[in-house]
Length: 201
Image 1 (cartoon, rainbow, N blue to C red):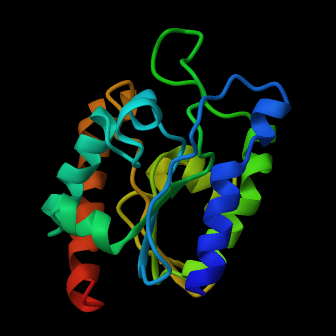
Image 2 (image 1 turned 90 degrees about the horizontal axis):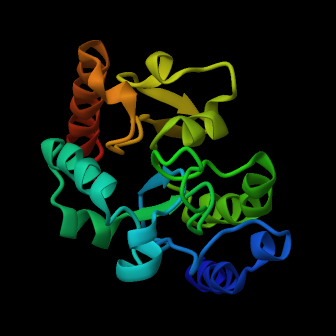
């Protein structure tokens, strides 16, 4: 599986589908992890810091907040990055939101163009636990009918895997400003801490 995943990862690095389709995305594609990963984080898309400076997932301001949540569940950032897989619905920076607030949300077509890579990562890594981060990632697994308030703070089993959803940790997210939603985040963090002990993650 390791060799197969390495081949897929090289295909992802070489991918130019969205640019060729005319979408204003900026690479390189961002992801990290190995076939030995038992947990996978799936975000929306990398930000400008990830593609232009760090070349690793969740390393901008939103990533800093995500890793504060994960630290509360018992994982230090360096350990987490070393042991687990981190990817996203689309793997290139989609560009800024035309409204000036946050990043542009990848279109449905962009998501479809990138979906083959996510399917391959899921199949080859075969994680026991998946953490969808943000509503776009949550809808990818749960469907359009679910909202973050229906998912965050709960533990689900789908297709033989455990799912624990988190909201997008961006400062542009109004969802995080509501106290009832912050309570759901605390419940999700407690679930992740329990899974860490239960599964020895």
